Image (tube, rainbow, N blue to C red):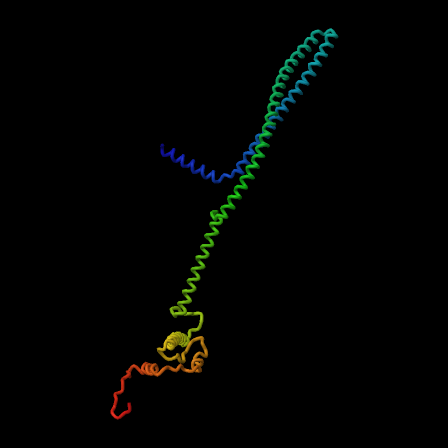
Length: 289
């Protein structure tokens, strides 16, 4: 197969596929019905033309017959008047008219037969067009119902183009929303940690320092409270905590936890400064035990 034939076949196949995709059976049926109506109109016009020709031939035949009758009367009158030559001429003309009438009658018979054929064909075509119209409307209604059912099923199953576009739009909106939420959370964390500065408000270094101290103090208080519960340290004392007014007063008003003597000695040992390590006092003579 040559290159040109292959290209021609490919082009035809592509064109056929494109036309098949673009073709709407309802439009095709309507076009076919329109063409049949046009053909029926042409047949009816042909019947009318043949009937007109037949009628014209009938008029010509009537006129020629009237002329023949008049020539016959004139020949009879001429013969009665002794003009045999005139009577002969009138009869000759009458015979010529009779020949024309015979030809016209033959033509009239042909036109009448043709008119009958066209009339029969017109009736058959009319019945065919009516049947095609009924079938066309039935097919169109069935196709429309099937198309609607297909679109409904595709919408329910989510495979239609419209629903696919809606699903993609929703997915993109959800992705952008999640991305914006993650970005907002990250910025909040960076602002809280001090990695980013909030230029929309006034900068207060002292308040930031107090907040950091308060946060560290909260942790220390929690550790001391846990140690006190485990018997490894004293109860927590005053602490500066941001957002907790009156917390130091609450701890001052509460009675201090009384520790056993062994734990008090251990605590005193723990409370000594690191430059003065705890040392046992030597026993001197004369001192009470």
